[in-house]
Amino acid sequence: MPDMPTPPQPESWIPGDRYYVQLALGQVHGVLHRVVLDADFWLPPPGEAGSGSLTVDDLLAAYLEACRQLGTVQAALNTGAHDLPLANRGFSGAQLKAKLKGFWQAVKHYARATTNNVSAYVERMQSALGWCGTIVGSVSTAFEEELKSIPGAAAAAEAVKEFIELLQHAAGSSGDNSPTPSEKSESGDQRRSKRKIDPSDG
Image (cartoon, rainbow, N blue to C red):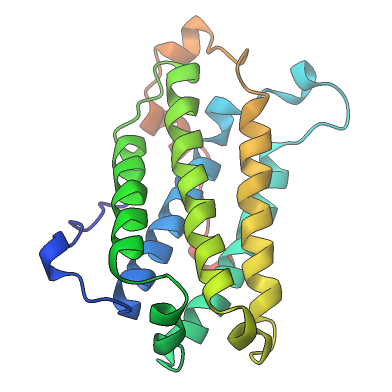
């Protein structure tokens, strides 16, 4: 997962500024990227989960779609036309501050998670995903009417939320996916290097 920028200090926050929303959405993208990249570690192998179970390739395909959908939402924000709805619908001031502080704390904890213990890793991952869902849901709610006027934006926001929920449900079935001794001797970076996500596909 890429290094995360230092979160802005509370006194520097500008109510309703789309910069912070865009920054948060960028971090949502980063969390989703790592969750999928690490799926070989936390997702139960198909043989253990039963026939027809979710696979890493399934998650990768869904992730690439989510990347495009998240880009649609961010493009809508980039216009600056929705700055006022940010402030008028609760995504500003104290509420924005509280959401961003909780979100960045969860993302920071997840960024420090190691692949030495499945249950501990999944616990931090679930917390980060939960906050990702909160951020995307807040953006979707704040721009509910505006997104309807932008082709594909409303559907894109809903699709990203659904992908986050998919990851949360998948992670819920990973509790018994303990790494074998050979897996424990292999670093998380070595495992992740075996599966590359082509940015050009996103």
